Image (cartoon, rainbow, N blue to C red):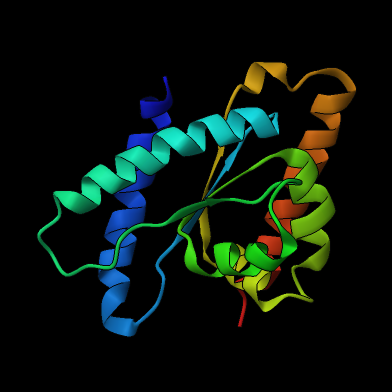
Length: 153
């Protein structure tokens, strides 16, 4: 199931990265939103293996695609680097709400991430119901507004 959304995300990120190499930019970014930290970590381990395999088979001089996890277990000292240098970020609604969105204009790394954001994948959408679903809906609306402001000159 993961490949259903992962392949288009990887293709889009790779094309964007390749096109932006001439401008020394990072290309577009994608956020993969999972309902739990455990699921994000599980998917990250699979994605890491896939990216490593792609890198080993890539004969071009394009910088490799990078992915990272920003969640409650990610040390604060690593979050800026992940947000600044990765094209694919795996996270959860709580981290998005409590760490990334409130700090987008205080941390240049988060502003960079949100200004480059072109794709949002919501995994396990069927679990977002009731109060949790309403909360996630509001977080996503806020994310959309912040991205619009972060990407404007």
